[in-house]
Length: 152
Length: 83
Image 1 (cartoon, one colour):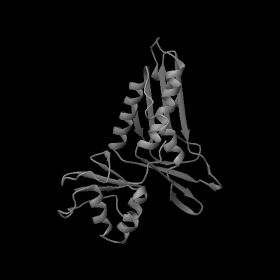
Image 2 (image 1 turned 120 degrees about the vertical axis):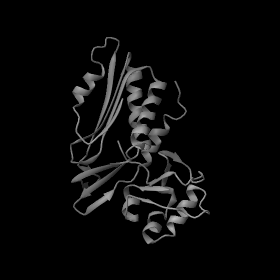
Image 3 (image 1 turned 180 degrees about the vertical axis):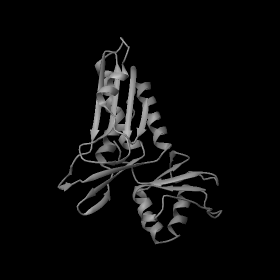
Image 4 (image 1 turned 45 degrees about the horizontal axis):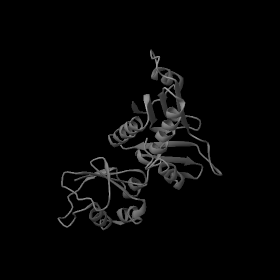
């Protein structure tokens, strides 16, 4: 399941909800992304996440379906926030449930790596000097490429 | 044709969306970028470096050689930075 929302989320409640009432899940892997206060030497006052309503949900659903195609998962959850966020606030949650840990852990990393290079979100940082759009990192493309051609 | 701009492309062009009727010579996404860049300094500044411009047509990523239709929704934006 995927969700794009302005509101905060409760990671514990969301993860518990992923497997509520089930007995076939062996493990859950999760990743929670937060707004970091520092980017190098620069102090971040706030971060605004812009997105492309419609396409964002579509790409997240595709990424979610691809994870479910590659690994035997019993549940997946991707929640991504948009709007203005302060340092320390949660941005994104990825959680994956599977019978065994390897599938859950790998699928969780796959989802966050792919999301970072495919889902249309853009970060704008506010600093003492004003504001600027965050540039994409080459490392994100490399992280995504690790999964390309790797089929299970 | 509905055009959408995001992140710094929106800032430089000065609007989030517009409806445009490109001339018949605009057949592909790349043609559209060339035509837009000729419309004013804001457009030109936004579209100077094509390596950092991504194009989505009807909410799917496409290459610059992708053919366009008059009723397409075309979005222009920089490489994504979510997560």
